[in-house]
Image (tube, rainbow, N blue to C red; front, side, top):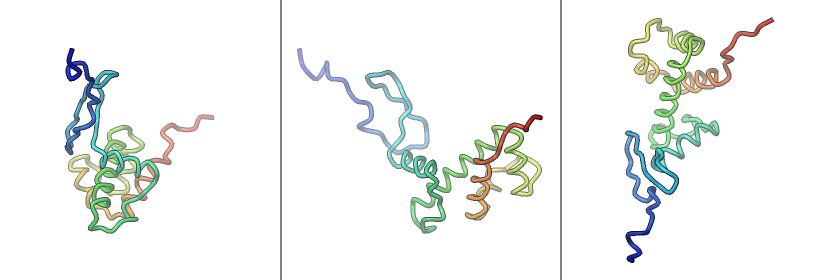
Length: 127
């Protein structure tokens, strides 16, 4: 028996950079994988590292801002209370081209909006 046939690949050694979803098989089944840079960007935003802490020309700034915009759009689609507060910040009533409007926001407004969405209560208080 040759050892090459029985050797199990780890499934993560040759991950290319891409925005599309990549599925890989490993010892435990199939899972979604992403490149290390995207993983670090998501980890930084989870740890409250904001785009304004980097220079505007750096790649970290661009990636963090792109991820923050993506998360705000997820909030927008998830519920009425989030949708209302986002519309109130942007001062736009309709939902068309919401991504473009969010991208045009300044860094401070974007970060303030994201923090307020994280702290927002989604249920009304009952007596």
